[in-house]
Amino acid sequence: MSATQFDLEALKDVLYSAVLSDVLDDFGLTRQALRPFVRPLDDSLKMIGFARTGLFANTYEVRDGENPYEIEIALIDDLKPNDVAVLGCDGPTMRIAPWGELLTTASRKRGAVGCVTDGLVRDVRHIRDLGFPVFHGGIGPLDTRGRGRMIARDVTIECGGVTVRSGDIVFGDVDGVVVIPQDIAGKVIDAALKKVTSENKTREELENGLLLGEVYAKYGVL
Image 1 (tube, rainbow, N blue to C red):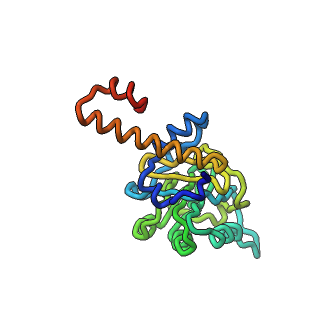
Image 2 (cartoon, rainbow, N blue to C red):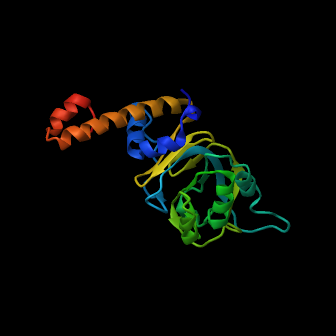
Image 3 (cartoon, one colour):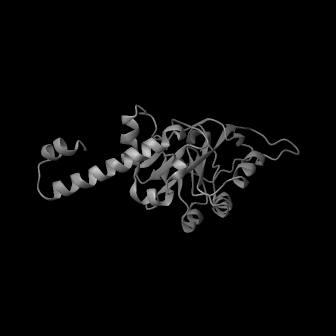
């Protein structure tokens, strides 16, 4: 089954980043969790959707007649329902905040379900009021104008130490963000759902007083 055949909203309620990371480990993909400095603006929100990537580079001026937001605007205006904007900024040391309230508002209207960036975000209070999941590398007020700009969209990027391609599945919760390559997304999600069932059974057995060793021998889940 392909990832597009799953009910993403239902999966968001059932899955969590830790179980997806474990399953990706089982597939031999051990570098799919973004580095731990990438954190949610709101710990209570979860996110799952399809990556739409944007690649940022440092700049030091704005030339006459140049629109420094051209490619960024094109990406936001092209977002589809269940898309997640994933912005690679080479970490928070890039000194820019490529995401804020207005991009959040525009993305929500397109049906997008979140943003992930290893750069900074701003307008935090407004974004939290909108209830839009944003995972970020830090908080700061600096606009990208004259400091950085998106140089390409829907290309392979690195964000928070993970390679991301448009169409990959991106899942985020309070523990962090995990990226599932689109070519194996269906298999990973199937395996994750089975692991969730096993973990639920393990939890029940532990609550009933069984020893951890006994339960692990029975279900192989820890």
